[in-house]
Length: 292
Image: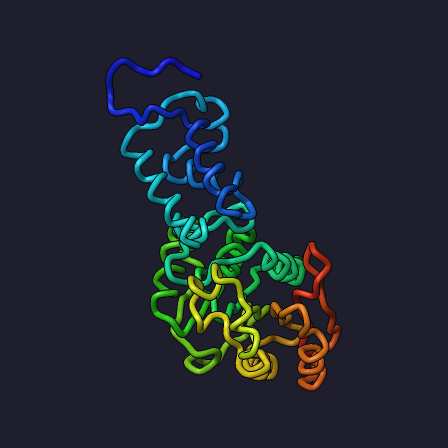
């Protein structure tokens, strides 16, 4: 360990020692990812990158930053997720502010990858993202495809404000129109090459079984999909046809046990090439199809 400086507002702990202190507290409390959570909080609250940490881990943490780390640790021990404490989440290699919107999960990258594949051969694709939340799907697609444009909707004005911040941070704000709309309710006519959505899909009976880190911190309206969890799909799947060009693509994220019901909605609405994609854990995650 480095010798402590003779003067200055230092905490008395190095970055590595601070991380170890947090990890031990988290382990003692039975947290599943104690070491990872500890490192994320130390880096997030001190502004260090992982490279900085590797190179400067034996330097001492400034006292004000260490105080912030300890406060964050207390919040984590009270059950608040790390991404909520830091108010940001990484998605497909980019950082997004999440504030009071649904925190995106890595599994949702399956939907992004499906959409990118669907428009791979389309010149200047136009995309509609319904229930955009923080904007991770539409904005990630725009960042990957500099020739693309998008309309992204949400019923929550706070979510749209967060999405706007993220669009500016990613430099894609000039290619996305953010609109307040309850699904298709406030949209005018439009023709899109792809429509995608990660809607609420938790059934009423399953809401009480959600982990507290989810139920207490993600917005209820972004989770609950009605009695059987399928209410949004009954609107999205048939409604998207009116907004898709011929051979246009629709993709929706689903719960692990909803494949049969959602595929049936696709077939009943006349979509072709209907298929389901799995996430890295092998669970059904995305149903997709094309307008004739």
